[in-house]
Length: 192
Ligand code: AP5
Ligand code: MG
Image 1: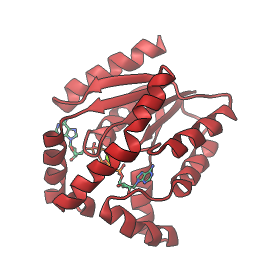
Image 2 (image 1 turned 135 degrees about the vertical axis):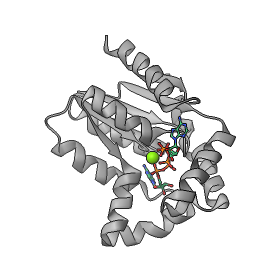
Image 3 (image 1 turned 90 degrees about the vertical axis):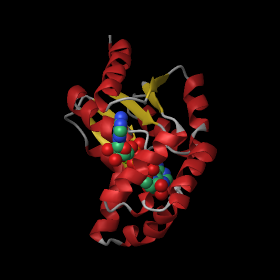
Image 4 (image 1 turned 45 degrees about the vertical axis):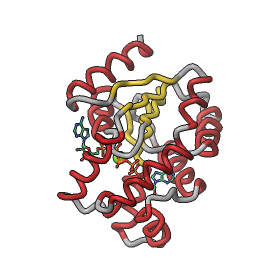
């Protein structure tokens, strides 16, 4: 089973590209952001707990997302592997994921890192905020805080996985189709 991390700042296209990648390579798409939003939508106790953290653009506690991912990995049998979107986001999350995978004789095979300019990130997020209900897309200060939290807490993971030899940067500017072609070229290289 292959394990791919899709990595990049808020608005870099992780979710958009993940749908195409998961379909083409028969991977289970695991988005911690989507899972947390589903908890909020269902009105669960966990949803109530994380709602205010997400509305500010801060990270929810590591143990919450680690438990969600562990449950999904354990249940999966039929796919060719996993595509992690928005996880891991801290060094602790990365170390816990590696521990879980090691226990199954697996490892992180690739970190696909989408590179997108700051202006383009803000443009995409405000664009979605204007048409969809994601509250964290509607306030400029929350968008800037999400990008800042990414730079300080999450970006160091690029170096962490670069040292492990699995870091694969992809130009995330251009059309969805153009970027998907670049991603497929990168995946096919490690798959061959
Ligand atoms: P999460 O849901 O992961 O949000 P995010 O990282 O802020 O990123 P987005 O989902 O907004 O962007 P994306 O990169 O997926 O881009 P997308 O494809 O949507 O996290 C939300 C919150 O949950 C966090 O702030 C945190 O509180 C919490 N959380 C989640 N995971 C956590 C974890 N592991 N630990 C702790 N807390 C966690 O695209 C964005 C927009 O751009 C869309 O409208 C799209 O249509 C458009 N677009 C995409 N590609 C292009 C393109 N090529 N050209 C033009 N427009 C495009
Ligand atoms: Mg997303």
